[in-house]
Image (cartoon, rainbow, N blue to C red):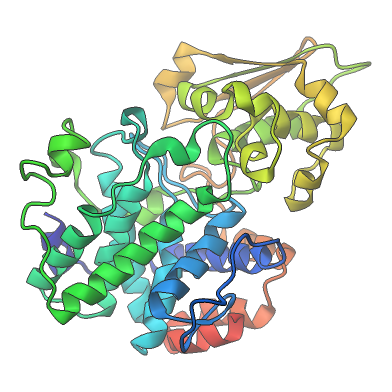
Length: 409
């Protein structure tokens, strides 16, 4: 199934892939201004990453961590959510080492998106207590396999070596969140790159990683419906974020910025679908102590947007502002069954401030309300990405991955 798509894939959706690449690079570039919770002093090497020279697999970890750290890169919403551009961090590291072309990078991305997103249509991992990065790692292994020119048998081993030893738990995204929210994605991509290198060198993985007696579909996802695995230019089904918040909060922030009221705010009611409520409105989300929890908090993102009439990266320096905290106490979040039934075709939010309501069904950047390349470039510029990098992405077929990596690092 996965190997068959690997062998038959033809590059498509190049412009869409370029937009996701540009978006991921811009977000990672901006993340370098943040206080990163680890260093590379004990991991030396000759591969450039966004934080210095290191080994190829550690560069994959670093690059992915920075792409994911601000929670501002792309998203897929299905039975299981995914941030497929996380895998780009590993492809930049591996593409540098392999002297890959820009077109090779796009081809690998397209493959990885197809596999990772299609797997997310087969089952829900979060409802079983497992993390979406399990599917991210598989997509990254297939994408890495292309850059390494793996045979079909080597790819089977790469996928097996990615799946069997590296099952990730949903505890990463439960209650109070930490910087491991980004680390989980980085570790999944690092594992995929390393597993692909092992497979290239001859390492064999367990032959039945999914359907074996103790395989993935036997223990983790018994209801996995592989008939739903029908990859077809899946990059077109992914969403780009307009605001630096978890995707289920995008429509809520948009609604907050559109909301109108008079006098003092006496009440705030957010009505939305089940996934948004369960992920962004559990008890800890009314008392966020760090950005990792705050960007997954409907009470914070809505309150800040209502009061400041904007939401950007600097919003998280105001987590403890008294007026924001006071308004958060007034926020109520409620599931509307009809909204849950419309998800994920729509991401409906109805925000009522006092007695005035505003509704947003599909936020900007969603596949049915997409951002343009010009809008993505504007976001990249606001994030500080150098104009030369934007130009290189625009002309990616004509450049090497090394050129892109050297320019951004």
